[in-house]
Length: 313
Image (cartoon, rainbow, N blue to C red; front, side, top):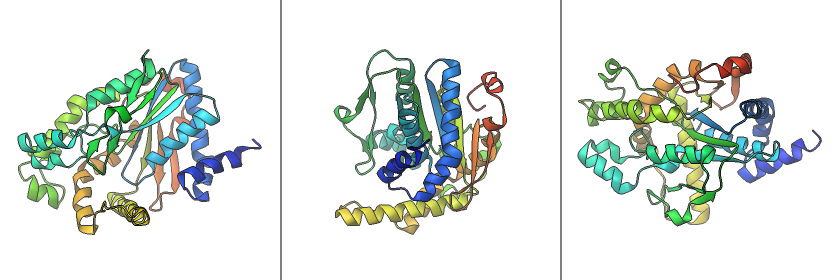
C-alpha cells in the first residue's frame, strides 16, 4: 500500500516510538489486525479483544496500535481500554487493607479493581444502546478522575480492546499458595491470607469477566527477571518526563520498585506458565522486547477458532 509507511509513521510519532517498532508492527501486528478484522466480519458482530502482558511488555502500545489500525486502515470504530483505569479508589482500597489485609492498599492485584464496572463497560461498548462513560484513573492522585472527565462514546463499537498484566490469568491451585514466593509474601503475608484472597477474587470475579472476551493475545516475557528491568526502564523514563515538566510528583527508587514489583511476581510467573496454550495469539519476547516467535490462531483456521470456547479455562 503506497501510503503505508507515512501513515504508520504518524502513529509512531504520536506515540514517540522508535522506527524499529514500525518494523515490528509491519511484520507482526498489521497481520494480527487483519486477522481480527476477518474474525469480526465473519462473526458479524462487535469483538472484545483481551491483551495479556507483564508490566513493561508493550501491551498498552499494542492496544493503541490495534485501535489505530482498526480505525485508519479498516474504517472500524474502536477503543483501547486498560484494566488500570478500573482501580478501586484510594479509600476503597484502604477499607480493604483494614478489613482484609494491609497489602490490598497497593493497587494492581486482582481484588483492587472494580470488576463490575469493567464488565458493564465492556458489555455496553459492544452491545449497549446508550452512551457509555469510559473510566479514567489518575495515578498521580491514586484515585479515579471525576466522572464528568470520563470519555463518552456511543456504542456499539466494532472493536473494544482491553489490556492488563493479569488479564486472562486463572486462579492457582490451593496447594500452590502454601509457600511464599518472595520476601514480600514471607514477611508481610506469612499466613497466606492476602494471596488466598487475591486467588479467590480471580475465581469468583475475574473469571466471569473473561467470558466476555472473544479473542486473546499475549505478549510473553522470557522471565520475571525481565519484568523488573522493563519496569525500571519505565520508571526512569517517567522520572525524565517529570523533570522536564517540573512536576512535583516523584518516582520510586530501586528499593521501592523491587517491593512494588513483588506484589505481582506470583501471578506473573503463574501466567507465564499456564496462559500460552490458552491464547489465540501468542508473541514470545526476548529481553529487549523483540518478538522471537509467534503462535496461536495464525497456525489454525478460523473455523477451528469459532468452535473454541473463547475465555481461558
